[in-house]
Amino acid sequence: MTPALTITMTNAGLARFTAAQLGDGIDLAISTIALTDADFVVAPTLEALPGEFRRIDTISGKSVGDNVVHLTMRDDARIGYTARGFGLFLADGTLFAAYGQPDRLFEKSPLTTFLAAIDLAFPTPEIDRLVFGNTDFLNPPATTDTKGVVELATQAEADAGIDPHRVPPVSVLKASIAAAIATFSAVVDQRIAVLAASIGQAFDGLAARTTFGSGLIKGGGRNDISRTLTVDAASGTDTRSGARADLAVTPAGLAAAGAVYVVAQSLAGDGGYRVWSDGLKECWGAIAVGASATARVNVPVAHTSFLAPAGSAGAIAQDEQMLGVLNLTLSGFDVQNRNPQSATYHWHTKGV
Figure 1 (tube, rainbow, N blue to C red):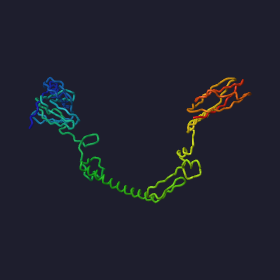
Figure 2 (figure 1 turned 180 degrees about the horizontal axis):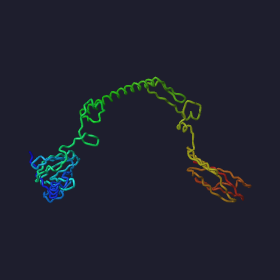
Figure 3 (figure 1 turned 120 degrees about the vertical axis):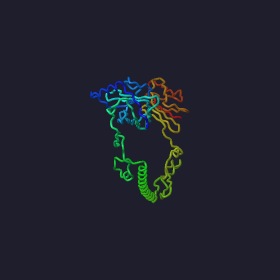
Figure 4 (figure 1 turned 45 degrees about the horizontal axis):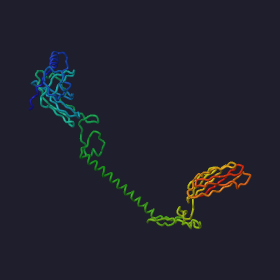
């Protein structure tokens, strides 16, 4: 049997204990136990526990004779610590008694419930006047809010799945999961077989159909093998002749036939330009030239090789041959009017 720990009563605790013997109605209930890991000197003059770091209120105790109290305390918190001493506190906050030693007395892991049962030897008789709570801890039923006692479910109870109070052990849970997987797999296999049959029927129906080309499209046949549908392209000669209706005109055929198209253009009201795909550029416009004057025409798109201007004059009464073009460049030309009247010259250029 482990010897009882000799506990030291504080002066304040002894005064409260003595007053209670005289009938002063003092509550001698030990409400909490404080823990410390400090190596301190236990003395009756203590009013607080040196190095206190935690208090435990889940305690019970009972006097077992010879001034000895059997004390039990429990701590469910998910923390870890060590302790070299402790103190007993009354309900009014008085440090009633304390115990300490150089070596560690308690050690708790964060993942465990700390449960300690110790015997305390008091220096004062009539210790049975102290109140420590119940002699046994309450074991409540487990709920979603409270840790407690549960009953393990049988395989039949787990399969039924209607009892909210029983907990299946690992072996029962494994068997239930395996049965659920087997049932699910059987259902999935059945559904896959039905789906595969439906897909097979769909493919059989598709293979029985026949695809034929029409119009420009040639080829076809049953869909049980790969088929290639084709469209023949018209050559340059075919494109120019325009005689065949079973060929498709392509950009290559158009080019081979000599077709050209507009690359860029501006169709302004008083002039503009057009650039063709073969490189030809056309520019046009009108310019007013004063009497016996010269005016410069700058084409909107400069030519790169040659420029061939042409034009005509209007609204002049005398010799129109006196209106002509001078100083021809790739980007423009001058219009000279030798008439004594102003004239409007309508011009048109072509070149690359």
